[in-house]
Amino acid sequence: GQLYGDILYFATEAQAGWTHSDPRPLYFWVYFVGINGVWVLVPGLLMLDAWHQLATAQRGHDRPRHKAH
Image (cartoon, rainbow, N blue to C red; front, side, top):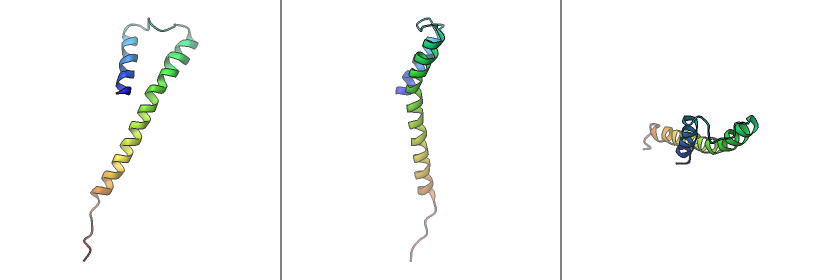
């Protein structure tokens, strides 16, 4: 949900022509992109970690099992 909200936040601002952000490079890149980018980076990394964990678990589950007699 956080990642979806961030994408909408950046997309609507881009569509508005960046009119609601400070046009000075320091403020735009450091504050607007950098600080808000953390809210995209962290959920993105958590999603990648979850995908990796799920893929590992699925591979373990899909491995053929040998019957013990």
